[in-house]
Amino acid sequence: MRWMVLGASPSAPDNYRRPDVDIVAAAGDSIQLCRPDYYFIGEERSLDLYVEERAAARVAGTKVVIAEPLLKRLVERGDDFPHDEVIEYCPGNYMHAWRIWIPGRYARMCAGGLAFQWAANHGATEIHMVGMEGYTGQVDYFTGQHGNAKGPRMTEEAYGPLMQRVADKLPQVQFIMYGTPRYQFEGRNVSHG
Image 1 (tube, one colour):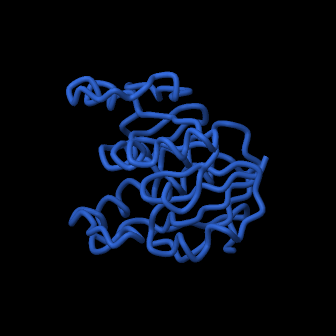
Image 2: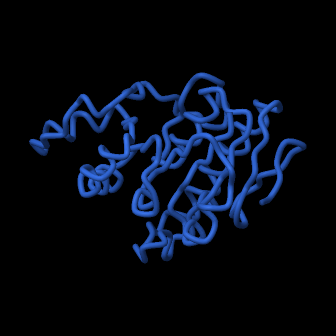
Image 3: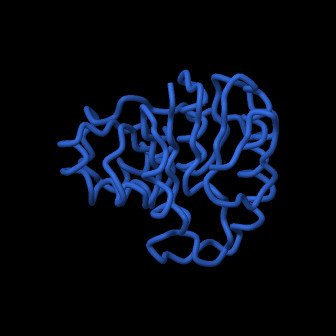
């Protein structure tokens, strides 16, 4: 099964149509580029974006995977988010040590990192990584959104190590990176598109 994991880095619009894939898993701003098969909500921004795009996404058959800790925020906000849209709540007991990722589990991570782990845990034989280069701390999103000042540190200490660890643990899966990652991402099963 060939998956594309579509993140929201500035390179995403240039690369998202290139891969020939079976399933598109999107996160963050990338829901504005396409109507994915799956959309991942891992933080407030991705939740707000989905609420804006909900009607079109539902017509397209997009399924939602949401990080369980956001359920509390939905209740607090009084959001009328229909639970029938959600196919799975990723468990709240994420592993905190992303450097020791275990297949079948999830490390605490942003929506793009969650989508990446989901593809890895759901039978992917090939994962095309588009808009997944990591955070700069400047303008991190193709929509021009300003990044978090902690972005480079998060990329170095968490995001990058998670991506590399997944590739190391799944040598049978081919990982194709579009764009230049801001973290170490290499191995016999890693190439660049």
